[in-house]
Length: 359
Image (tube, rainbow, N blue to C red):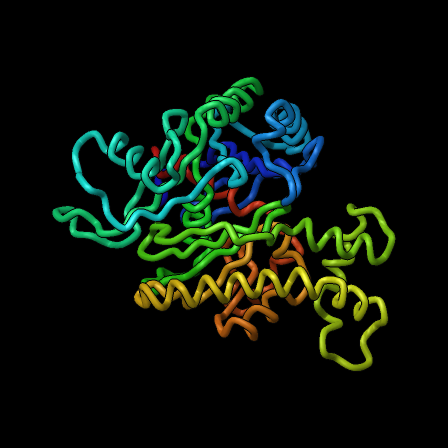
């Protein structure tokens, strides 16, 4: 997969609450993180707010510059960025009425038919939702749509910080690359990813190196957990992250637990149940229609992945092996790298690795 080049691109993961910058280096087939940094957005966007109402605030240029300054050791000027899921719409198209070289026009018409509104201002990324032989048209397609001004804004934010923006990638593709990077051996069975971010929770099923299904889970942003804990304990929101890492779900259904651990677990319970229900509903829906892509594992990304014992909880509740994503996992101790917070930087690291795919 990887060709000879020591340093990857600069990976820039722009979210609603933070901006993350990271870079990989490679020695043979081994990847290592050489630089990374995370900075908060000047005004985080919550699940109750529509990003389209905050257009003047969505430039991430300042935060990118701050993250670059903090990430000592960055090399090179080529960069790739994510397109924040809060700015995107996902569409699942069962079939296209016609298939021609002008695929953009066909997709635009299909999206307009589905949404009953104009798609003239949108840009699309379209890919098959299933394996196909290249001769026959796939029956199902995934479409990621974004308003052109947003993609232009992201590009400008990257370029204004002195980088050559090589690619703006959709999160489903970025998570797919991260999963491939984090596997200790090649897998042929479907797996899934949950990027539990501040204002969005994005679920993605990966099969044969492509995101065959993706969905933003309704009302499941991590900000709901943050707000529940901060309100319940009367602390600042930024103070909750340490408690989630230290206690998390350790206070659930266990006797003799620290009183604070029990309280934190109780405060998490309601927003966590919403996440669990949405995941269960999505898995049931996918399994009923396309059993062949039922995932065998779930990898956790984002701030939610740092919640103590979340992977164990989801394994029990969903009956799917769940684990926190990490780079170069060690089979003998799969949780060895969790303190390093690799799950926070998974998308940014996957963007950095694009350098070797393009070489």
